[in-house]
Image 1: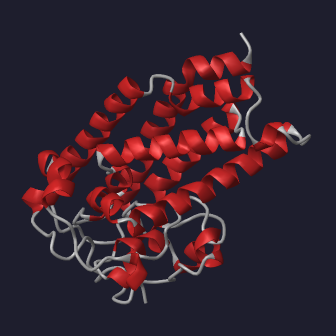
Image 2: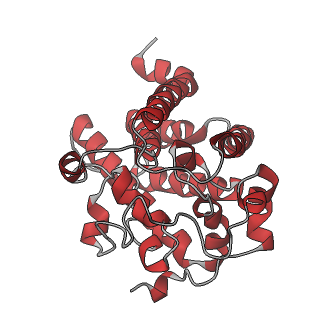
Length: 280
């Protein structure tokens, strides 16, 4: 069996291994060196947030059995996409694919803040009243489906290889858990890391209740796009320990921190004043 076939056959197991390993590492780090005191019971939030993760995983597998890996396999077999039209090395194509896909995720993130119907879905992610490793995977099921369709389109247009897709998805998953972690990093370490990757202190600004700050720092993995497109804010105005997490007008834990409430939130309420066009 070739490496390519092995990856196709074991893609699910590979991703689960990295998810569980990094999740446990960040969770232990949060206990050992927390950045902030939590305001809501960790057990309550974890049960709800992780229940949503399980539901989303089941829905994605039912709707898209082969997921992004399968789309990449078909795309490359048919030689579709930009990277299949240029004579570049396989290694360079992987690097460029990962960077290009990360830019797509950045632009998608800006889009879900800018388009009202998509913001209704995305507000489920922002409505979490605390910020920890589980927040990184807390997305409404319909937004997860939308995200997967956008990813499929990017893979087809770019001609991303199976290896590149797997690397990108693992990196995105790992960095999402890392930068949503309630973990302490020394200022000097954070300053160096955020030159190469989105850090918890950098992304936490994006979860401020203040619209001018929640409409900044859209990056999940690479930190460069926010600087390039002018959406970067270094620190929250109130400081990390005193800043308020979540959305104004959606502060009821029974509405925003339980599974039924999260699933119904886009259809019952919308956080006002978060239009990206009004960003300072």
